[in-house]
Image 1 (cartoon, rainbow, N blue to C red):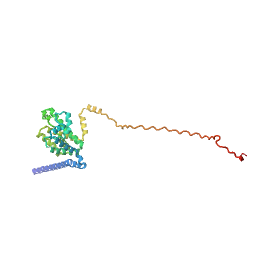
Image 2 (image 1 turned 45 degrees about the vertical axis):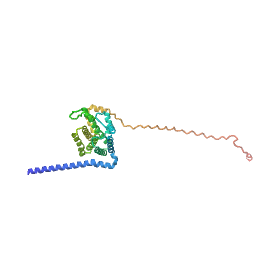
Image 3 (image 1 turned 135 degrees about the vertical axis):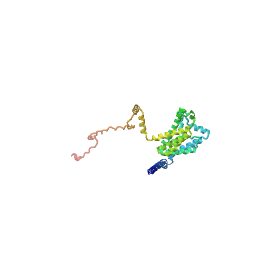
Image 4 (image 1 turned 30 degrees about the vertical axis):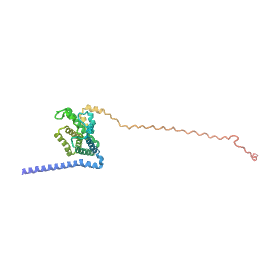
Amino acid sequence: MSVEGSAAGSADQVRALLARLTWFTGRTLRAEWHAIVVDPLRRLTRRGLSGLVLAFVAAFGVIFFHDLAQRPTGALWVTRLGGVKADLPLWLSLLRTPVSLYVPALDLPVWAGITQLFLAFALAELALGRRRTLAIAYVTTLAGTFTARLMIALGPGWWGFGLPPECGAVLDTGPSAAVVGLFTYLAVVRRAPVVFMLTGGSMVWESIAVPNLAGREHLIAVGTAIVLGLLRGRGEQVRAAVRSLLPEYVVRSLLSRRVVRPLLPRRRNVEPAPAEPAPVEPAPLPALTPAVRPENSAREVSVPFLER
């Protein structure tokens, strides 16, 4: 009886654990469905096609540069405008990086890349806004580019982190790092584990299956997006942590250099009001003098009976 009772108790525990796991999975998938699909569709119906400006620009930009690269002269200009390599000067790489977001890799199917690019920019623009979408795409791309430079500068070795100098002549990943970064950032911010596994997990598998420069840049983009997603809305905590790591005298010197100016009202150039004229005293009235009758002014009339 004790053996049967213990078996029944363990079966009940397994059933309870499976029920909790099923409930947690269903709730997580439902929340992810609303965060990744339902909420962006509501915003799309409210904003219309104006909410997909970045997605259309990115898709048409990739189509334009892909069509231009089919000709020898066009391919040369595409490389000059958006081809980023690790052996280029830093200022030239920074100048070409914005255009490189629209230059597809020539060894990959362009239409599949356009679909992923359009979907990533569309979801990010609807969920995050245009400014943050551009910032995340640019920062993740730059992180991959700078890390590739660091790997090549270190050289082979360094526990597999360094790369040989020949990798400096390989073209950058193009828009794929931005796509991976946007999907990963959305997955972290919106708490979407399925999207995270489809993006981050696929990049890890790619870097293991095909160990090349592009795979490493994708991993760096994923890591940068994770850090940015975790730091969202925690600026004050990050500043406090940085201050705690710095020495006390450095913090005091930085705080002492901050000049706090009081908020004074802005002066306006107001013309002075014209001075009021002094009151004018009334002039004294002339004295009333009896009128002087001029001589011979009137003729005297003599009446005979009055003279008597």
